[in-house]
Length: 80
Image 1 (cartoon, rainbow, N blue to C red):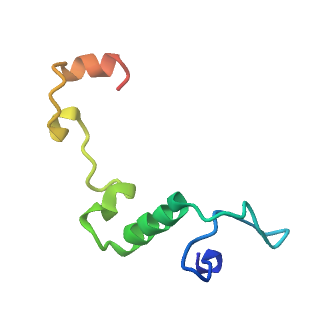
Image 2 (image 1 turned 90 degrees about the vertical axis):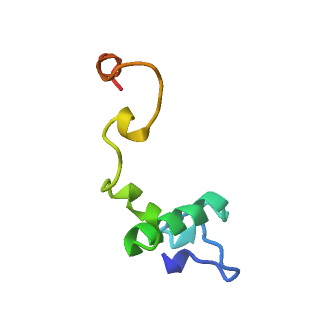
Image 3 (image 1 turned 30 degrees about the horizontal axis):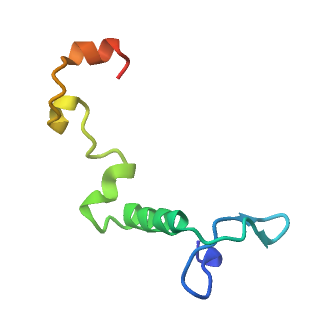
């Protein structure tokens, strides 16, 4: 990814390999955020790093502690 890093530290949104060109020519905050999330997921630096690896995600609403007032069976019927 470092080939997409600009001199000012931002990251270019995209790169077209066949044309050897940056496209679109923009450095968005969400591109930088995606780089930070990827680095964290690969380096296991913070407690949130596991969210993209599915190791600690809850498997039910009960584990989340949400109180929606509906049963797990109602959620299953609703496709959730």
